Image (cartoon, rainbow, N blue to C red; front, side, top):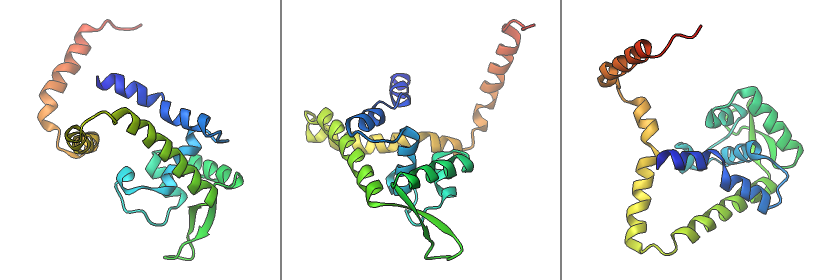
Length: 171
């Protein structure tokens, strides 16, 4: 079930559909940058504040030079603008323009409409149970990465040995 869900999410079906249905002149990478710039706390797990190119790169786990190119493209298309930090005038920040803000809102609205349509026949008890469980589940990989995983070492070592001993050598 998780693999099926992961593959669907990996295909970015909702994002592609949103770009197509809203006739947007950007691709998924640029949409990701807009979302990372808008920085909802529930998505990135941090308080939104000033956003720099390095912030976007970190939020999307992409190379800073790639983030910089995408930001420059979006500035050229009128979705983003550069600004001056209120905290440090030497620092350049990235902000959504009205076009960028409206685009983010439209994409989110479309995605929520589709999700809402899917769960519209669920009773309130199902929704009340599902949402907190989904939120809890969505953090599993972050929590797993931060936990001490040494208890798995004996099993991991056995798996390494099995692979080493049972796979034919390439040559």
